[in-house]
Amino acid sequence: MKVLIVYAHPEPESLTGALKNVAVERLRSEGHEVRVSDLYAMGWKAHADAADFGDVAETNFMLASGEAFANGTLTADIRSEQEKLLWADTVLLHFPLWWFSMPAILKGWVDRVFTCGFAYGAGGTAIPRYGDGVLAGRRAMLVVAVGGRQPAYSERGINGPIDDLLFPIHHGILYYPGMDVLPPFVVHGAIRVDDERFAEVADELRERLSSLERTAPIGYRRQAGGDYDRGLRLEPGRESPGSTGFELHIA
Image (cartoon, rainbow, N blue to C red; front, side):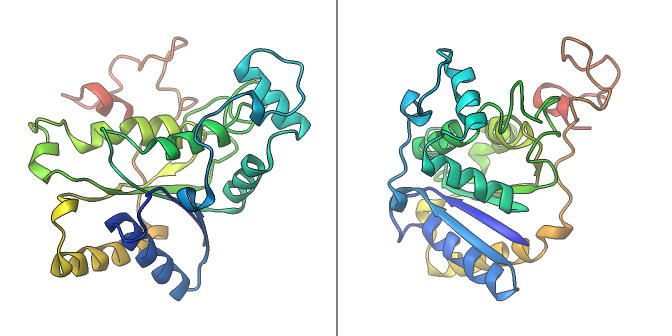
């Protein structure tokens, strides 16, 4: 495999950093090619703005990003990350869960790299979306460190089910431009992981990485799969009995 790891944590000695190192070592030991985008070490600019686009005539921000992509005037850092995504057949996002989402620097990576014409939008190959697009055929998995304990992120947990919290990333960021999304690797109680627990977690991650090519993705419904009406609402009767909320979009 060709694996791109996008890593977002400011402290190399963090649990997230240690798990990134475990992933690099295991994947390379099994003969896979690995590239790492260490966003903090790269000094990645987290906010998208018109300076990303070079000399374009379009004033609408979204369309301007598409014009810059089409004209090849996106900044070099954005073009480099887009090239890595096209090179990879598997993408791993390593990050801590901060305020129920990814760190701002990683969200900024998405905002700047997933431009109109590349990951979505008129003129690109990403219509229809959700399961189709320029990134179709690639696999993606989240490796997430969560500070709280697992019960608080369960069905009746005060923080909400972890699958619901990760749905905007899984479905809205990764599946939207076509990637197949694998079940996440989540480490709960991250601030309480001692050496013994880390050894267990590292072994679990190694096992998951060794089976990446055989792991079934989350069965999200394709936009063009016939399950949605013209308003992109799920057709009545398509859901499994009792399904509600985000579950409706899993076949």
